[in-house]
Image: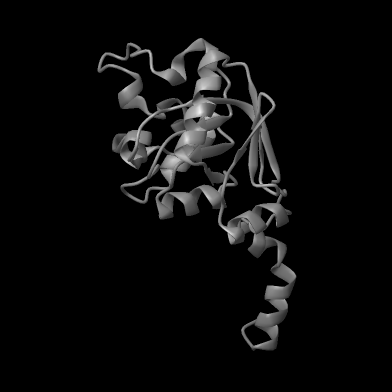
Amino acid sequence: MTGIPIDKINGRAVYVAGNDIDTDRIIPARYLKCVTFDELGPALFYDVRFNEDGTSRNHVLDRPEYAGAEILISDNNFGCGSSREHAPQAIGKFGFKAIIAGSFAEIFHGNCTTLGIPCVVMAQEQRERLAQLLAQDPTLDLTIDLAARQVTCANMIFPVTMKDSVRDAFLAATYDPLDNLLTGREAIDATAERLGYA
């Protein structure tokens, strides 16, 4: 196996407003019993998207103009709460490839990173302007450029920040620790043999 470098993420975006959106809101606890993570996509934000009888609450994720969006935009402290990996898994299985927010909970950010979902930080004023653009025209494409640390939309450039170590891992395709182990199997075997463990 060899990881895939991630330097740019392109696609349409949707703004899910709110500070302190926790992992239980992202994926309710009752869905943690799933057999595979593939089942999580449809349950993303379930309790705020649907009524108890399963009817729609007209959540922004279910509006036709945002169907197929691949970039999720939100606000401060996104992914706080419990450390469940199911939250970023649900986001990925729903179809999102990246997240823009004011800030991220640390463990959620780390879980997203190992799944290949970049989390970039954008200042509030810039996010508000970006959200306005999307409200006016949901068909707009965004490009998140990790190398340049910027988002481009409608010929406008929005600066973003990201931890250097995480950015470097995406650019070098070393963000997935399991892939790193599998790729380095020969070196691991050689070290084990040299140390007498083989």
